[in-house]
Length: 439
Image 1 (cartoon, helix red, strand yellow):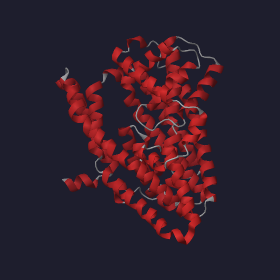
Image 2 (tube, helix red, strand yellow):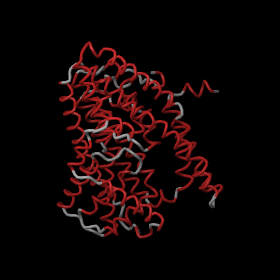
Image 3 (cartoon, one colour):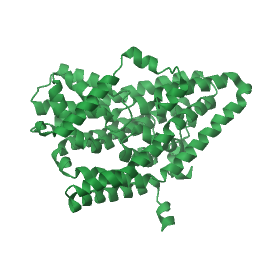
Image 4 (cartoon, helix red, strand yellow):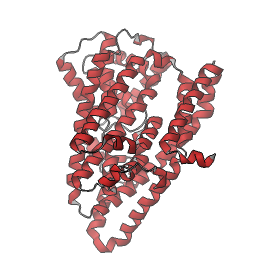
């Protein structure tokens, strides 16, 4: 039986875990009911999901550091970094503009906020959201501070605090230094190349626990929340899921099929494992190890590009967040009875695009950026608190789809950059997808 279970691809096992977790959560919420079911989900099941997420998070910084250093070394020429980085950042920003525009368009077509009684948000939810908003405000930094934070004064501290941008910067600089040293740094170069392989192998071992983690996370969400919130905010969920699917099909699909001339089915087939993990963890950073594996092994992107562009994307490319902020803005305007002008739409789009860039790749981070976007068309702090508190309990299910969109965008941009740089193997892309556990 075990051999049959392991014969399924990882995405299939993750899907089975997702469905079983959904059913188990509904049984806990409605079958056992009362306070007992949610307590079981929170106390006894959720820790297994949290443990799975922590296992992946344990690998993120070592993986980024080792693979970027190895990737820079593999390039052989530091000049290639400028071209590669410029293309990646430009394309990430362009897809974000499309994303927020699509979010506002779908929000105006479906009108998820029409007739919604947002004042019914619970007091507990309001208290939680207020605390998180205050924490976010305390962490807000000026442009100068954000720019200087990229350059670590203490690289070891950056590694220990998981400051992703600082780690990327230091890893790139270290890789350039190793290249400049030439033959004298041959042993150091070999160390990082082998370390990269070791961390990726460890990632594959950890990913074998994904079905259990996904089961636990889904059982917790449905066991504590049930279907009631899904029904209450079904139009908001419909708007988000529809916008994300359209964005993946037409924006990323256009990039892959029309611009690059590659089969779209192969692209998404190769990303299934990463999409399953992204949907369950709601974290771009936590999904990064498996995203790198999928892009290298299934999409034919050379490690030198994948290890450089994907960590950057997990930090600055948040198309799912941009879509979400556009929809939440229209949701709030409709719920509050505010007529939006073209100037409002422009300001919402600009603010949402800017806010989404650099959003922390962790669950529900984007929801707390909504207050910034809502303020541009006259929503008061009190009204914003009620709107966000109304959505907050349901946000995990929305965040799942946002994260899938984010990691697909990372993969599409990385594939484009690799193809334009000549670091792409089309034969691998067009072949059948490889199970990432076989790497």
